[in-house]
Image (cartoon, rainbow, N blue to C red; front, top):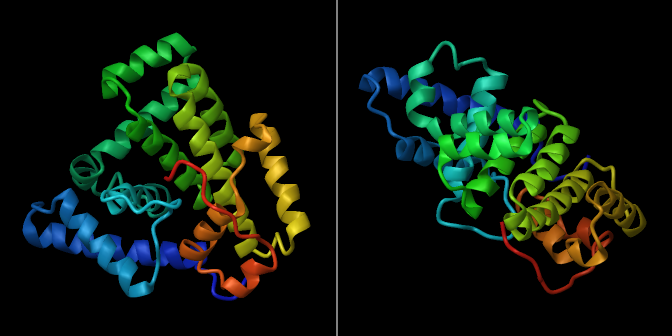
Length: 249
């Protein structure tokens, strides 16, 4: 394990503490807590613990709203709170519940039927919504509540259901590969440039990506530094610095 790494266990502990605060505020206020209130509680907790949301190179205005996916996943699958506090989930995590339903449809239904059922739930799916759906599954994988193969299959299915969104999905694949390499560095699984390149190309083979579709090292470095808190000294032994030429997530 790399020194300085923000590990999964720490994130889960912080998210569990946030959940305890949410439940306390919810009960004291008689259920008046809003999604923006929860976003603010999560942001404050992350800032105190020097934790960054799961992210790529960008810092969009809705980054912490997107990071509610982590809170949803840990609350539902890690703490089993959905049955105990269904009103909280219905009010605060309405979008994540929809995305979860969409993921189930995408994994089980024929392509044309899936597209029509998803439209009933979400309407016309834009790039941001599609990215949030994929992000939710990535979050489940990150916290070990789902498998890497399920995420890869979901991405491949999304390409088939929404061929007109191929650019967005391929950019997400680039982000996914960069994220997985950064995670492997933080876990000590990648220690040098040779093993980094080997993992990069192995991940690319999963999606039959050409070289131009792979993330450059500066993108990997940004995720490794900001999300996983990996020291620059370690990254310099593994990554080379190049200009960023990718879609930001």
